Length: 350
Image 1 (tube, rainbow, N blue to C red):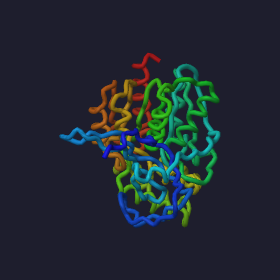
Image 2 (image 1 turned 45 degrees about the vertical axis):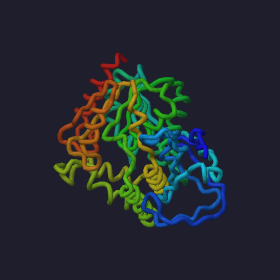
Image 3 (image 1 turned 120 degrees about the horizontal axis):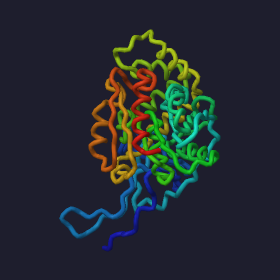
Image 4 (image 1 turned 180 degrees about the vertical axis):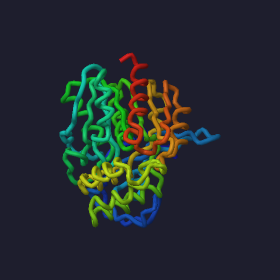
């Protein structure tokens, strides 16, 4: 029997909608116990493969995709059930609040979860002496709108790209902290032509493990019940270097940033973080300069991850480790962080 040799109809990051009959599915990939699949339910493609040559055989396997739904259930989409799925539209962009300072080459600094652009205040002030530095609040954070729904990384990236359009910025150096790094990677997937260089600050290219993904869904439930304080209590112990005194002013500063983040924004971001795709393949043939900046004592993204990523990149990758810093190097060691960013930018000839 002749194999279906059509390419996969969906790409990684695509939104898909189920249009088939109601079905109750038992646990497959992922940890969700079951999924009641009803018409109109939407998910995001995590894996998409075209024709895969069987090892040691001339035959080929047909296309295969895997979608993840917002409750964590993952479902394989193949030629056998592909007719039950269609491309889904994506949400409209929102107008982001942002601050801007300086003139010259555009540098965009994206904050992490669940914070705001305020974390970059020291870096923006110093870098603005030479560059045009734009610092937005991402959807659901700071002073930007916080509509309900899941904020997958491509949606947050489209918000940022729309902001650049409004500012008439064709190309920029885009750097992101933690979740902001994932947003930068999503923007790179959508519009690589907009990048002069990429910066991942206390960030990584990997997707969530099943354990981490389920942890995000559990904390989202707690935030829905108890508000933003539940997120602050869960995150604060892990954000800084273990050697930082609990009474350090930046601890309370970050606590207040989290408490000011709307629960709808926290929940939307958690759901989007859980379904983000792996980005190693995206970076495998990248030709852009990349800055990988890591806190030596990061308790959330271990130093081994940016080290491994730096060694795997074919492009000009600069790995800088910030001593006496955890997951928040721009606040824990602001001068060292700014110096590393400035040195990287100077190499671009910008």
